Length: 253
Image 1: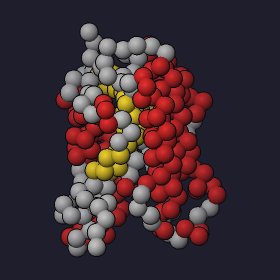
Image 2: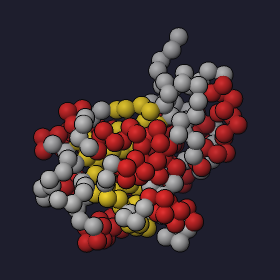
Image 3: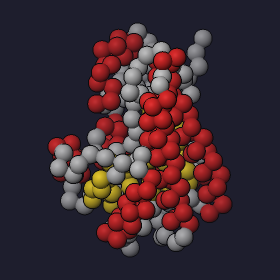
Image 4: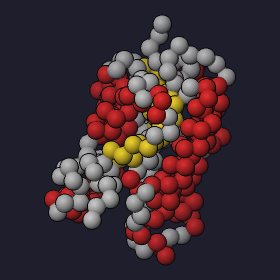
């Protein structure tokens, strides 16, 4: 029997690479997809670090018409998917007063973080329903604590992640009767390229007590949380919302 196959969007860097490393360590075969060119240094370095088996596919989440071709190519080269980790996403184009958000910037972030994420998951779910697999199957949305914790400086990002959170809940209900798990992971403040521009700001806030665990989160923290979800260890917890944030989102007095 072949090993299970997982698609990790945005798996060439940051949180996605941490997830891909964890899955490779569990014997998963990997398909990595992002909008970066295959020749980019980040892609080459990630594939080298992950070993000989991962395949890379260039895909823009905002391009819904490209979803069937992406999944057809993965199936032709590697077989049907057993797990989707919908991790890829973008930050707000502009951090500032939410009263200044433009329709263009709002639509851009929604097109990737919500619309693209939902329709890729929908397409994967349809294909999972159309065939059987000897492996446990699952879909995991990597959202953010911003799905719950509001910020007026990047409200469009928060709204996109809150929408993705409801997509995960709804899909969990739809797929529970057939044993396909759907989960949502909410990373907190994770040290990646996406947070590099605000590192000094958040380091000071972490040192000031913002995160009870008193440190930055790392991509491997998220990878460790994904493993029990995709291996079926938490199958009866389908629909679970799991914060991976060092206690950041715990309500405190």
